[in-house]
Image (cartoon, rainbow, N blue to C red; front, side, top):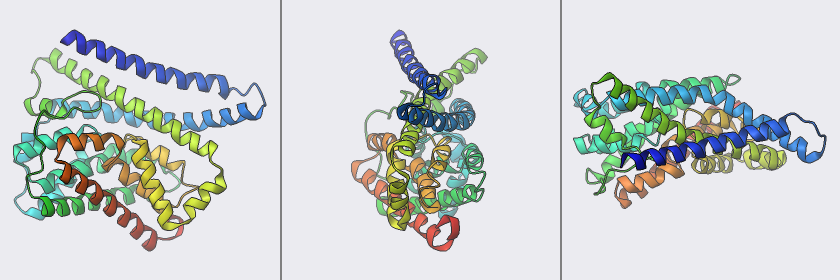
Length: 347
């Protein structure tokens, strides 16, 4: 069994290295600009945009992966449940605030949330925790600030919208559904095959070597998954920037409602890691309004293509559909309010 798991990890690692090598090959072949043909000029521009995204995002992704792996090994659901307040509203606020010190990606957070709910955490705080954590944690906020150095207000805007949005969604979902939302069956498996919720719940051996091995296994698994999503998202973003005419993007981005809707859809499809999505979002800032870019930054960590499948595997179908619709409506409303009230470069 262990040999099969190791073989799968080797295969995943090889696939990740192959994708990374392909990206390096594109940069090497077309970044030098030895030819002046139109095709190679376009490829050189594509390579420059792609590498700028990857090099800016990678340090924050690596930092987030390492901290997330440490948390998965040492922090259990019981630790969180013991410090939950009794007041219903304060539970939601507390659940959203946990995300400040809990830098877990949107993939790993769903199994952890399921574990918390099985331990007795009410649905509202559990969903609030699940939605807020990938947005308001310090690593994501730091990467957002670094990505938007020319627009530093984007970081507190993202934090505020993510914090408020998670609380509102948690309150709405808890009122509509009650507690019977968990789907029966086996524990959901994350995109990279790790049962994070169970591992966090039961802990790892106190042996230092076993602990180090567990941390490295988590880090390896998350790096394979997050790295592939980061490269894929960066390639798509760079391709859109190079292939779609600027006047087309400007035309779409000119409409308040249309631009928000398009960027929300893009966030869902790209399925980027929240520690890196700010660098991709920044590349759209000159074609889309600031409010639509803000929508991209709050929708992606809450709901995207990869964690939609995980939600359907973790929660009942009816609850998952209502949760997704609630997320989309609340995020759209927050972005629309931002566009109406803030104005200027955020309009």
